[in-house]
Length: 147
Length: 195
Figure 1 (cartoon, rainbow over the protein chains, first blue to last red):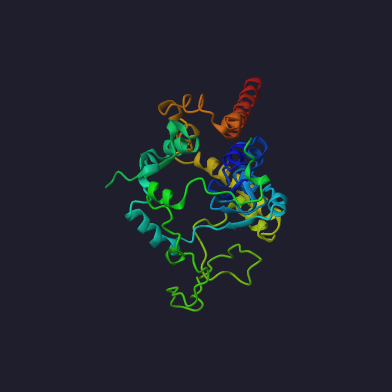
Figure 2: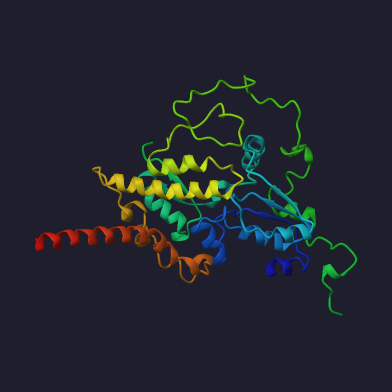
């Protein structure tokens, strides 16, 4: 957050996107109450960082997913900074044709982020590699071997 | 003179890099700049073709009194039937639906029911030829084959401080259950010896 402030000459960014969501890490209390005890509908660490690092009057856009019950979000900060909060699950049908154009034009390359290809029969190990972030795993693909 | 940062000066800051420079450097930068290209603009698109051939869909047959939200006027026309509520977890789930989604009790009961359900299934698996095996089925063996230690240490991972909880949360219920079974068995054996 302080880094972001320095990068923007101590103003804060115009727009911050929370693309992490409920599984965000970095705060012991938030992690234990959300991921472990399930007393929060996801740990809003990334969202709180977004609220803190955007400039006053800026926009926070949330694509990271959260669960149905309450989360410890710094709502007062968002209100007092006059932020605009925009969020949704992806309206895929509406966005898909345009995104596909971007892929065809070479603007987006989804294959660049794929780090692991895991056969379906190794799914248990595959899931553990993914969830414990072993072996620098970022985006695994499950592949069916019976092709 | 020391340069004064933006928040304390009157004028709007200039961009560090112009739009032209960014467009030249990053392929696709600003591709959605023109609102005409944006699928989300305008937000409201009247007369959109939904593809639905019905006004109110045909109602699915309700083969058992399915739990439903009290925030709905009636059972939704279509609903899932893949996991009928069963046993103690089913009873808790049905009870949770007495509360609206606006109540914490609704969600906390459903979370508790999930835990009960998991253990109902673990226990019932022991009556089958393929009992649950937490060692092979959690995939934890990949810790050995996929650099469990070097993936974690020396990498400034934010989650390192609380990773010790994971084996406790996942392993402790199994360890306690195994300990309980062992203690009960010992007790029975001792009683027999005495008799």
